[in-house]
View 1 (cartoon, rainbow over the protein chains, first blue to last red):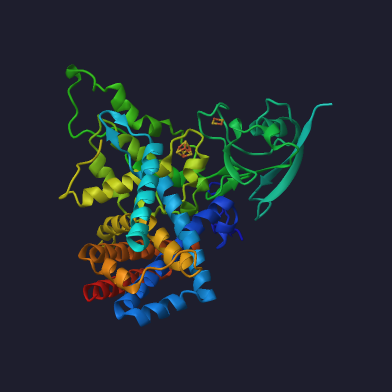
View 2: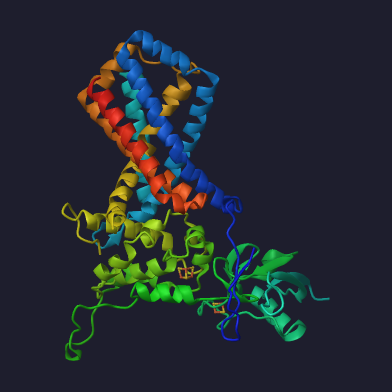
Amino acid sequence: MAHIAEHYTEYHPRWLRPHISTYWWLRKWSYFAFILREISSLFVAWSVVYLLLLVYAAGQGAAEYEAFLEWSRQPWVMALNVSSLALVAFHAVTWFNLAPQALVVHVGHKHVPGSLIAASNYVAWVVVSAIVAWLLIGG
Amino acid sequence: MQKQIKLQVARYRPEQESESVFDEFEVPCPNDWVVLDGLNHIKDQLDGTLSYRWSCRMGICGSCGMTVNGEPKLTCATFLTDYAPGPVRVEPLRNFPVIRDLIVDLGDFMQKLVRVKPWIVRAAEKPLSSGEYLQTPEEMDEYKQFSMCINCMLCYSACPIYGLDPKFIGPAAIALAQRYNLDSRDEGAAERLEVLSDHEGIWGCTFVGECTKVCPKNVNPAGAIQRYKLNAALESVKSFFLPRGA
Amino acid sequence: MIKRSAEPLLWMTFSAGGVVAALVLPVLLFLFGVAFPLGWLTPPSVTHLAAVIGHPLTRLALVVVCTVSLFHAAHRFRYTLYDGLQIKHLNELIAILCYGGAVVGSLASVYLLATF
Ligand code: SF4
Ligand code: FES
């Protein structure tokens, strides 16, 4: 719908102001990917809640813990967790790729290339994941 | 016979219609013709009433930005053959009010531009007799990328945040602020931060990143904004560490 | 004016949370959300898990992970509603709900891990 300025005179043009659709993010794949990235926030929040439920169960002893593990096998919990994993991983990848844009590191007079900063993020990701996994199932 | 391509050109003639409509034209499509050549052909041969802006036809003046098949483009740097067999849809830049046909109003952008003081600000000017302000090539490299902006406003057209909230000061203005902040001769960073630390300044940006994708000059305004956020955040806790980077 | 001074701080927690969530959450979700329930890997025994969580460093780390991740999520979601749905007029309410949720979650994590 066009909105037309009220006072149209020879010297005050009648402008056309196209309206932005509420669903603007469906117009282009890159806009949609952006909204997907932002929606990952909900799944980050869920992951934290899930983590706290796990901590709570583990603190209550073997029976509660078993019950938690049982519950985590329910189809809807699994479905939620699989989608969370996908979106949190999407968040991680986009985050690491965009980090060099905000962070410009100087060594002496030279800029450290962005690809190096992104790469170091990925290395940190692997290392942290390995440590967590080792703590939980290795040690 | 000469290859032809169909152009669908958005028309808006306020004395005649209240919505924009499309007119179709067949134009020649040699390999070296850009969309702007197609428009000029229409204006010269087919319909002299078509209105649009252009000047340099070499990617310098920044006045020929339009929406080509949904993407903001410099029409003087967008080849028709890349869209063969067509049709090619040419519309005015999005997110700006349309005055006529393919011409949008620039007023909002022009007002925003001056607000960030895109010039070198000095606390006190050196007297002429003490010579130029010297700068090393490394110091120039710090801001050179941001100085390439030609004010074409493609980034504003691609930015959904600007579309949704016209008060947002927008990509190019922030990139230009950063261009002067990073200049070793400049002392105006604090004054610019005053303007940019508003919600309508840097914080409104959620890093959609489209501005950087469409910029014909590789200015990377999205990067400038994120750097600026980091900088502003550090400034606000400067009791801790790091004076401003540059 | 209050907003204005809060934005940098909120952005800092958003960024810190973004880094932490990206580094830590995928592996935890993969293990406890996918690999253990599907039987790909054997979950740790409750004694082992309790010992890992009970270590003061782990507890501290978990509180930090939970707090900053929640603030990250709250901040981002606030802006998603703001831009995606164009409901700016509810800005105050949205902000209270989002950050309020993060505060509640963070307090819960502090309580859980302090009493673990
Ligand atoms: S930053 Fe790039 S897209 Fe934006 S006005 Fe400048 S040259 Fe054009
Ligand atoms: S006509 Fe000057 S930039 Fe295209």
